[in-house]
Image (cartoon, rainbow, N blue to C red):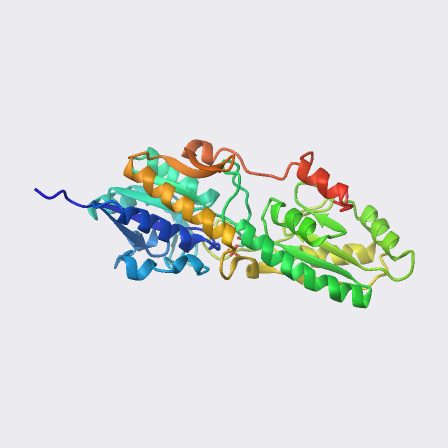
Length: 367
Ligand code: F6P
């Protein structure tokens, strides 16, 4: 008698991130080594299952070949379809959040799936945890350029974002130097300053402003003036989108309908104005890097990390180790429970060696 095939459903949720396709390929390639597993993908996170008609594709060799090099996600993604708080547009245009988790689990089971691999950030893994508690065989894979998940030493996508930001920073240095200007470069990262701090060190910034260390504008002006004291100087500042002044608030914009997050962005312009208001006489220019940081091909490091995560996630599925999220721990790919995965946010610690070393390199955090 031939053994019946088992089926695993893979999806990518939340914002895209370089390396997602390498995870999908890693899962598919590892599964092919088993004779009894087939891999499918749900298009646009759980929408592929919830929507009618459903959109689910088999991830055969032709579809996954060579995709580890490609940015974005071949499975598409969204951050507006949390099945626990699914945004349903009402007749009057307002949004009503509906819990569709029971329907989702029933549909996944009816489709004959034995397991699900959810590739996503903090929000996605919180969803994984609830679905696991409700009886779904699920494994998580952490992704985000922000590196803000505490249960893994690093997320894939982060290195790529830092590389892109550093390449951009290097370009801004030469123009800052030529014009004797203050250049402010705003990077992503939400409430964590990982991208900013790494970019500031890699690029050799004079100033790095992060959400974890509110800045003092007077101190910044003094720091800038000191650079202009002996002839004409120039200053390169990296600021994280979630940074704020002492006693100030973050700069945010209204998100789209159904989005769970407030949109950050624009703090570079706020800082520019604050510096001028505080008497900074140097010419200032602002650059907001935005989604450039999330696009394009992943770095070699991120391709490797993402591929290892994919293989590990599939192995957890093969061994029936559900309710887990793969993680990088002490240079080894292992896993943590979804409970641990979603417990703490990963902030930059202002007393860490990372920050102390940056200060040792002469970088001011405006504190
Ligand atoms: O979480 C990744 C991230 O790129 C953040 O750094 C940024 O604040 C946010 O997503 C942007 O989200 P969106 O793509 O929805 O504008």
